Image (cartoon, rainbow, N blue to C red):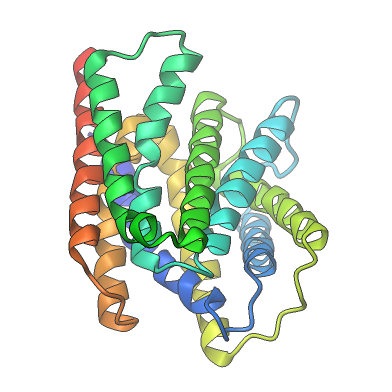
Length: 295
């Protein structure tokens, strides 16, 4: 397998596994960062840094041609507004580990969406693993379901929408190659997502930010490691490796997020957390094995 692709995959594993913690620190109660404004500021900063790097090192053309503009705008809105923005909204209420496990179910939805797009009937095995993953999400929400905590169930719904949006954005990105470098594509996607996030923040009347020092540090980490380094590696990996391989970050990210949440934020690891995580990862693993078998 391509070593450059594996290097970028490793970057995604480590960086994105830790961004759930940083998002939680930036938007939790008392941090002073409204989630949509925080996300918009993050991606605007990331896009400007990437554009500056492209101009400085002259890494290809900057202006999209033809359908390239539609591709980067559509994928940027899906990945950054629908995907990342909704994650930030959810993390104002729920733990980073919980969020990471729910988002870890994204490959399950991608497998179904790709079957529908390719007009292929999903196999019984594929559907079986999908239901295992859904069962894991249900187990994670066991406490909320039994206690009737509608706030946590609302957050779970927001995260499922984020999964669908991120999956669609990834499919558009992988199936519509552009002639621009990954850095330029990433910059345009983040710029598009930033405008979408800003508009949504205005519509929902988010308050002006007043971040704590801790929230600013978390935001800076998200800009450098989450937006610039990891997302560029994600775009590069999608160009080099099959989508199903790139999506294996879903195995690793929840484990890293659970460990960091427990160590740094003292987030609880319960039987629901362990059981739900194992079922989601089993479902994702089964999806990849099934897709590899029929490829």
